[in-house]
Length: 550
Image (cartoon, rainbow, N blue to C red; front, top):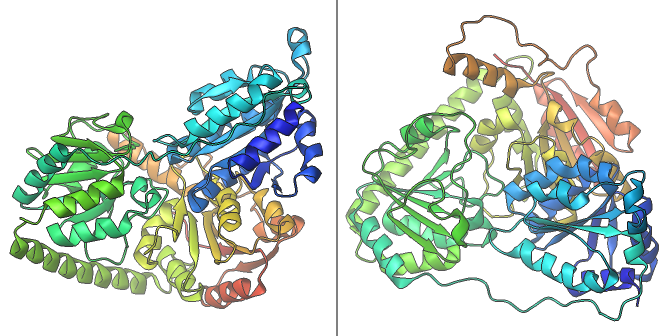
C-alpha cells in the first residue's frame, strides 16, 4: 500500500467527507487519488487563506474536524493568519501541506522550507511525516490532538515522495473516546454555596457553551438563580438567546471597561472561554473589588490562567451547568425573581432606546447602520444563519437580529479580518438546508474576496452583504482611542484609512467571479433586494453604501 492510499483511507476512517484546499504540484498524490475516493468532496479555493477560513467556520458549524490541504511554503505562509484565527476560535482542524521531495532537502529546492517550524507558533502540534510508515500513526495522532480541549488546528507536512512510498502499516482508526468529564462534587458544592450567597450574580458565556450544546442548561440555571448573561468582546458563537431578558450584551475590550460593566455584581461565573481577549491595556482587575469569581472549563489550561478564581471546576460545560442547577435549590427564589423582573424592565428600556436610535437615524444619507440592520432583518428569512464580520456595525446587528440557537450565528475570533466572507463558505457547506447571510465590511471583504469564486463554483447560495463605507472605520475609532489613552494631542486627519481613489466596485468584482450583484444606495431598496437575492437560490452580492465615521 502506498502512502497516499494510507492518507486517503485515514481521512475516511476519521469521518472526513470534505477537503478544503488550494491545489499545487506537491499535492499531486492527493489530487490524483480523488477519483478513487468519490466519498471525498474537494472544495476548491483560489487562495490558501480562504481555504483555511472556510474550514475554520465549517468546523464550528458542522461539529466535525475540518481537513485542509495547502501548497508548500508560500501557500502555508498565505494561510498562517487564518490558522491563527482558527486557533483562537478553538476549531478542531487538521491542516496539511504538500512538501518537496525529501531527497532534495539539502539542495534548497524551489518552494522548499521547514513547514513544521512555520506552522508551530499557530497550531497545537506541528510535524512532518518522514516516511510512509509514519503516515497512519501521525494522522491518527493529529486528529486526536486537534479535538482535545481546548480544540484547535494541528499541522502535518506531507513530502511528495513519502506519499508514494510503500508501507505495510495501514490507516489508523479513531479511538472511541468519552472525553466529557463530570464535575468534582466538592467544586460544584463550593460554587453553589457562593452563588446562593450572592446578591447580584452574573455569567459570562463563552463559545464553549454553544460548542457543547449547553445553551438550554445555561438558560435553566439563569432562570433559577436570577443571573444576567454577557458575551465576550470577541465571540465566534452564540451561547445564549439574545432576546432573553437576562441577556446584557458584549463586554469591553479592556480591563477597566469590563470592571465598569460588572461593577454592580458581587459574583461572576465564567463559562468556557479564554477570558478575556483585550485590545487596550488598562490597569487593574476586570472584576470589581470583593467580587467572587467562578470558572468552568473543559480542560485545565484555561482555568485560572489570567487571574485567581474563588472556585474553578474542570468539566464538560453542560454537565457542570446541570450540576449547578441541581445544587442551587436553596437559592432565594423571591430575590431571583426580583432580579428577573429588573431584567425585563431593562430589556424594555433597551428596546425603546434602540427603536429611538433607529428612528433618529432612519432618514440619514448615506444609509445609517441602524437603518441597514433594520432593513436586513426585514428582508431575511426567519431561519437565516448570520455570518458576521460587521465590526463597527456589530452593536446594531445584535440589537436588531435575534439569535436563539447555537447554529444561528458565526463569527471570527482573534481580531484578524477577512474571516467572514471566507467563513461563509464553510458554514454553507456545513448547513446546506439553511439560508446563509454573510454581512461584512468592505475593508474586511477584500482580504478574502476570492471566496466569491468558490461560492459560484460550488453553487453555494450565500447572500453576501458588503457594507461599503469606503473606509477602515474601526481604525479611525482606534486612533481616537490611542490618542486619548496616550494623551496624544492631535487633530490630524486619519492617514491611509480611506478606501477611495479609486472606489472599489464590489458588484463588478463579484461579476468577474461568477456571482450576480446588486448595488444599493437607497435604504428602501435593501429589503426587496435582499429578499430577491435569497429567492434566486444562487450566490448573490449586495453592495450597500453606508455612512462612515461620524
